[in-house]
Image (cartoon, rainbow, N blue to C red):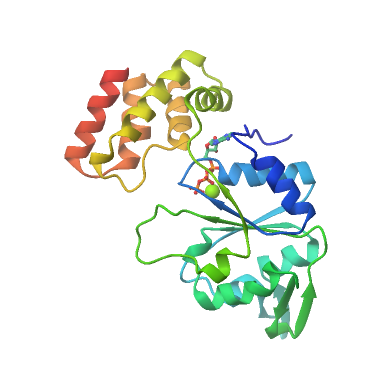
Length: 256
Ligand SMILES: Nc1ncnc2c1ncn2[C@@H]1O[C@H](COP(=O)(O)OP(=O)(O)OP(=O)(O)O)[C@@H](O)[C@H]1O
Ligand SMILES: [Mg+2]
């Protein structure tokens, strides 16, 4: 079954063209706005496996490329996810690529330009990516966790697709369809989201995402009263600050 993905712009057309042209793609946008779902849907459409790697500052080149393991008395080579994706012609999804260390990103560079090569030094192997291989990375420009930015020399290798929260009617459609709840309840959840998103004075690091609305919808579908559902699925994940939580609960009570 195809993963449910509701297009909100020309992202599918651009992605498929980039795939055909063998250009890597960078998905930009806040948490929970459909980036991963989009990649799954594209993988399904193109009949390619999606191999996801969550990048962080402890990820090493060996984690991505592979390493020698001792098994019994032998050492055996085990491909890392990047090597496997190149070998198998999969869609490689590097989630939160800006979190990766510079030495890791440098290893990926030859894969992102016309060379489409991967040098697996520990295995003394130079791999040429097959035409089916696609590199996709995600990047959340909103994070304020230190000076994490992608260098221009990295960014400029990618075709960029911006993700934002969809317009209200589309977001309500997504929530209703994803959860299987009433359109009216989904619409209310979106009203709540839009009110909170407009409150920039709350100083939230990240605001209400479609994911949080889906989670609230799930609790409601499981018979949790809407106010309670929103406090647990929307307010609690957004803040630990009692005053901000209070302000958010007030918004919930206004809407439900
Ligand atoms: N356009 C969409 N079509 C279908 N479902 C969507 C869409 N946008 C968001 N969703 C819903 O929101 C949830 C979160 O989306 P997803 O996991 O793709 O977010 P993300 O952008 O990858 O977030 P993160 O940056 O935290 O990884 C999905 O599981 C899905 O339920
Ligand atoms: Mg994701």
